[in-house]
Length: 80
Image (cartoon, rainbow, N blue to C red; front, side):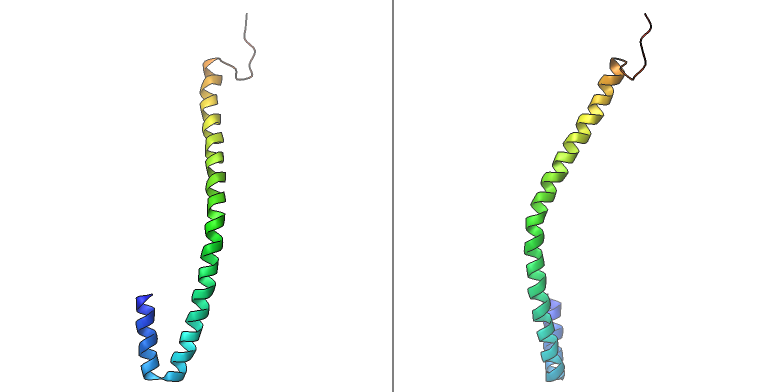
């Protein structure tokens, strides 16, 4: 952001009209970007919760595979 401010200041010194257009565009950009960051922060919490639940289910499934193999419950009938 510092680099952007320096470039905007230099353009304002060089040509006021283009500098004002640039500053207006930057103001709009930062306003939209700020709103999007706030919205994504709320959705990020939900995503973390959903990802945690998915990881827990995958780990449970993988641990269950070892038990199925240990007790030979792979769908084959045992011979007596």
